[in-house]
Length: 113
Length: 114
Image 1: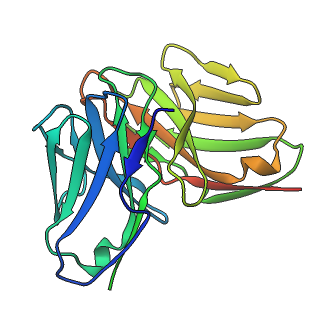
Image 2 (image 1 turned 90 degrees about the horizontal axis):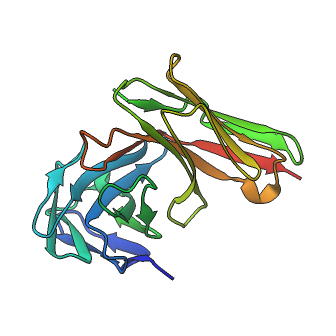
């Protein structure tokens, strides 16, 4: 069964901590994405990557960075966590040129206190 | 400014009746549209899609209608079942310009009442 796996379902971190969210896909997909989901705002794109070591800013990249050293792994980094980064974070992947959309992970619920 | 809009945050429908979820978009470059379904504590899953060269696509109980001139699409679920209760995201893409990016709407929470 193909899948996108996010390393943690729930995380609680303190303000100012550096936070790493990991995502691994086993479908050999070229594209990988990080979204956050907030009530009333839907899914907002933070960063995406269309190849190893490549990254592009999404709509809300401020306060985040990413790393893609291997094709199957895409990491989201919160450099200094803040309470307004409390959210559900969703990783997704897709094959290049696919018209069938994304495969999503189950999400990481991050709470910053 | 949101490029994909779902103006109804929530919808309640009786089991067995039709559910109609609406979506509007502003970017005329969009040429492919998708609906995703999301249960709590799970990631969204792909439900149905439609290309801009079509005006209707059907898959079992789910039908998506596209009105390009109005920049409007809708998802019809007939008959609605309690297991359809979820958040539904409308999404759109413009493949030639966007590195396969998909833009999501804010979602509509559907409750199907037994």
